[in-house]
Length: 490
Image (cartoon, rainbow, N blue to C red):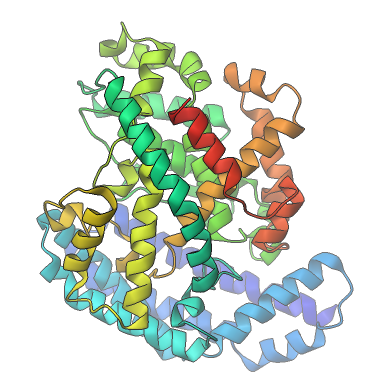
């Protein structure tokens, strides 16, 4: 076990440096003054280069070779994961890793300004560099069919553009039918408008109560404000959530908090004493997203949720005094075509993902240029939704992901939706009394089921293996479509 212990110590050192880099990233998105961006990019680049060197040193090669026949289940799984990460990392020069970190740090700042001004030209040269880097890395990593496959592997092991295209094509037909039916029903039965006066302080207080009730440990985390809501585990017992606020609609920040709390509960549910090991880290973004979407949608948009939480909300927001749980449930489940992904209802949400999947795949495969992206976005969006994009901020500049270099990330959102519905259905089936618990605002039994069947495994199981073990089958569209029909059509 000496070689294995050496690997553990090396990855504990790597985890320390990655935690420092994660803190720098969190600070950049929440507190960093504009003039500090350039040097922050250099800081993050230097740390990334050092981490890469530690991951790919000759010592690691020797230790991994010595661990190949390790019979211990967890140690073997950790060694296999490290081997996979090592084989990918060693194909990328350390200097390239540092340069990419700097490019994306500057790209993030440029995106924030471009989005605020709705001016794609401000971001275009940065995105061009990011796309070029991703293409180069895909070539270095290698692939069988599409360079996009090499990027997907960073976020969802085993996923390919071909398989996702089949899955999404299979989903698209019934989803489009559902969209039409749900929008028609919402139009026939228009809900009350939630537009009102919701002071930020009141929103923060309400969000905090909900977050704690779900089980998020605020002694090991916090909630802040950012342009684009996110969750980041910086270190053991330090998981940060962010949201953004709309003074006229409290549900914008609430659902942001519900979503990010789902991510945070996953991070806090992982074995904290194994934070430097694969067995203590999340398996994939498709699984991670299932946790956030489950708490945001299956729980937060349910009638049971508002039966319990509306009286609390009314204490914070007097304008809701004459509202009923049915009123709020209908308002937060209205189906309509919208421009912004993060504000889309459940039934139209995946149309946004289908669009991004196709566009970023084309960017990486070279069939779409960065300069032509806005026009292609607007045309695709018009085709999918029959809406005309009014400006870049409501179009191709709305998401943070590309500025961070994360091409190949977006498909995991739809995988997360499918997984969320499937896991929720399995939890209800396997946990006696769960429906009653949820109706009473008691979320401990659901969280326990997720901790046992998802969180505790860390990265010891591949995504499909985890889903099969938890639910009895691999990722399937059927529970998701049944969930949407039940909520929006019946």
